Amino acid sequence: MSGKHLLTVDIVCCLVALCFLAFTSCVSWPGHDLKRQELIVCGDKEVFILDLAVDSSKKIWSWKSADHPEIPENVRKKFGSTDDCKPVDGGTNILISSSGGAVALVERATGRTLFWAEVDNAHSAEVLPGGRIIVAGSTAKNGNRLVLFDRSRSGEELASYPLYSAHGVVWDSHANCVWALGGKELHAYLLKEWETARPSLVLKQKLDLPDPGGHDLRPVPGTRKLIVTTHKNVWMFDRENNSFKEENHIGNLADVKSVDIHPRTDRIAYIKAEISWWSARIILLKPDGEIKLPGERLYKARWNPSLRE
Image 1 (cartoon, rainbow, N blue to C red):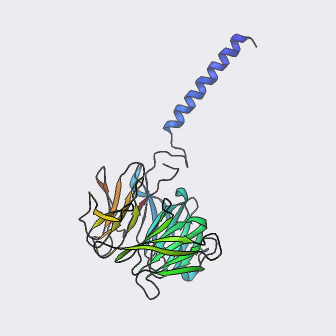
Image 2 (image 1 turned 30 degrees about the vertical axis):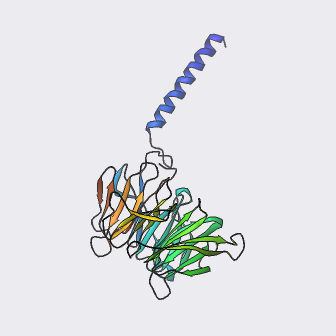
Image 3 (image 1 turned 90 degrees about the vertical axis):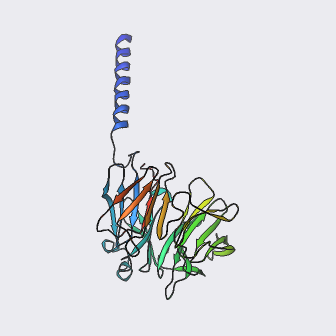
């Protein structure tokens, strides 16, 4: 083939490649959609995901314990009132807790349960280094405590620590500690003997809440602040100086069950109890909006900043 023909072929190949790149930048390929805005939502027996970039009222993913025989039947029945649904492991898994008395680590892609455990009135959970999971159990016969597990051994407690009305837990990689929210106090725990078969937590400090009824505890992305909700307010807690300050947008709101800030857009999603302990809508800020889901009992909503966005 002559040099002229080779040059023509090279030009055609380059043009085809450029067209393909332009095409793929406009088309949403399954599993590689860079424009998804996923919210993981819970409150009743179902945990589901909404994609705000497409249709905020349409569920694109759903999980119910009743559909998963890998969880023992007596434990499956305890997921009737899910109360947290955190994306973990880079958004590939979802950590689900239920006030019915159980917790589960669920694979996002398949819905398969990777870990389960029983904790009375479980209200939140967090993945810790070394394959550990900590669960906050609120007021109940065997509640008012933090319970430590190894995710490779479902149902087996490693240790527990008393905390009245335990409602929230957050891992702080910067300070290498666990923050835990109770009904009246915020605690910080250091890890001890973490690489052994008998890991434990050591109470580093405890702080009184500015008002009672500690409920939701979430990190503010890119900062050293934590969001803390109580019966009457929403607070920003500064981990550098141990101070509380009312949140700028919804600080004076009562009965806020969950607040979450998207790590890249800073958009706020929150749920305020409007009918007993639940609501049928999710409120959004920056930009303002709301998602109405009639018939649903919504309790918590979490952004899923996964690779799918």
